[in-house]
Image (cartoon, rainbow, N blue to C red; front, side):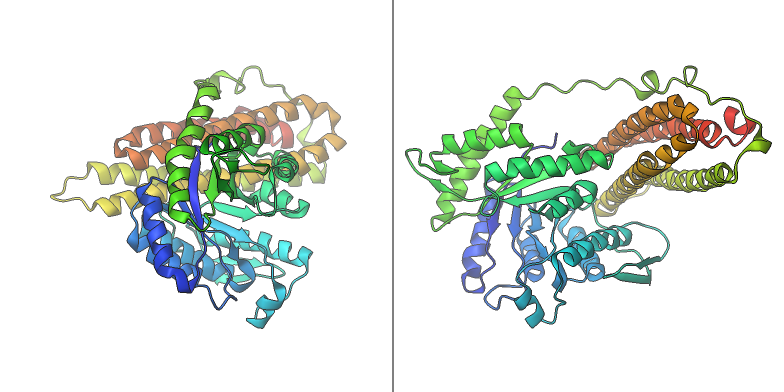
Length: 480
C-alpha cells in the first residue's frame, strides 16, 4: 500500500494571491505532503494554474505540486508533457499530474476549445495519457495517430526528474474504468462524491484494474475533502472534532483504499490547515500503522513459480505441420520479445551509467546531475515495468484465449505462463522500490543492479519457455 499523503486544496483566486502564497508556505512548514490547485483557464478571476505552480515551486522546497485537475481541452497534451516535465525538473521531482476530461463546455468553447461529447472527452483523455507517457519516455521520435491528438515524429523530452504520476479525476463508470486501466492515481472529491458514492466507485475502478492485469492497490486513491471542525460531532461527513475526522478518514483507508486526503479549507483556513496537519494527519497515520500488518518479506520469485523443471510442456508436434496462424504467432512473439530485450538492455545501461558516475574519480561532483541520473534510471525502470504490464495484459486478454480456442491441450502451459506473469510483476515492483530507495540513499545502486539481473534472468527463461511451448518455435527455443 502507498504511504499516506495529506495536503491542501487551494483556490487560485487572483484577488487573494497573497493569502494563497501564505497558505502554501504554511502547508509546507506544517509538514503536509502536497498542494493541489484547481485548473479553470476560462475563469478571468483565477490565476493561470501552470504559472502559479511555477511560482510555488520557487517558494517551496519539499511539498509536492499537483494541478487538481488539469482542464485537458484547453491544455494540449504534447505541450502539457513538456510543461509538466519542465516543472518537475525545476522543482526537484515534486510534480504529479491530475487530469480531467473537461467540464463547463460553454466556457471552454468561449476560449477557443473544442466542445466534446462525454464519450469524445473520455476518448481524448485516453489519447492524452498515451501522448504524455510517450513524450516522457526516452527513445526515438514518436508518431501517434489518434482521433483527437496526434504526434508526427515528435522527439521525447525533456524527461521528468521522477516518474510523474497521472492521477485521473473520475466519477462516472467509463472514466473510472479508464482510470483503472491506465491511471497511476485517482482523484475524487467529497463535494461531488460523498463516502457512500466513493465505495461504489472504487469497486468499478478496482474491477477495471484487475481486468487489465493490474493490482488495484497500485493505483493511488486521493480524496479532496472539506468539512468543519467543531467541539461536538455534527450530522455530516467531517463535521466535528479532529478525532472524528481522523476516525472517518481512517475508515476510508481501510474500507476503500484511500491513501491521500487533500483539505479544501474554509474561511478559517490557517486554523483548519494547522488542525488538519497537526492533529488529524498524525492520528490517521498512527491508526493505520497500528492496524496494518507488517509487510512480509517476499519469497524470491525463482523459488516460487519459476520452477523450470516443473513447467508443463506442450504435446510434441511436427514443426512442418504447424498452421500458418501458429507460425505467425511465433514470429510475432519473437519480435515482441526482442523488443523487450532491447528495453532491458537500456535499463542495464542506465544502471551502469549511474554506477560509473558514482565511482568516477573527480575533484568535484555535480550532485544535481548525479541525482538527475538516478531519476532518469527510475524513469527507465518505471517505463519498462509499464510496457511489460501492457504486453502481459494483451496476452492474457487476447493471445491466450485465441491459442486455447485452437489448441485446448495447451491449457496447463497457459496457466503456468499466467502465474509467471505474476512473478515477473512482483520482481518489477522490487526493482521500482530499489530505484525509489536510490533517490534517498545513493549507495543503493548495488541493490538496483541485483534487482535488474533478477528480472533479466527470469525474463530470459520466461520468454524462451513461452516461445517454445506456446508458439513452438522448435527445439532450439525449447532449450534456449
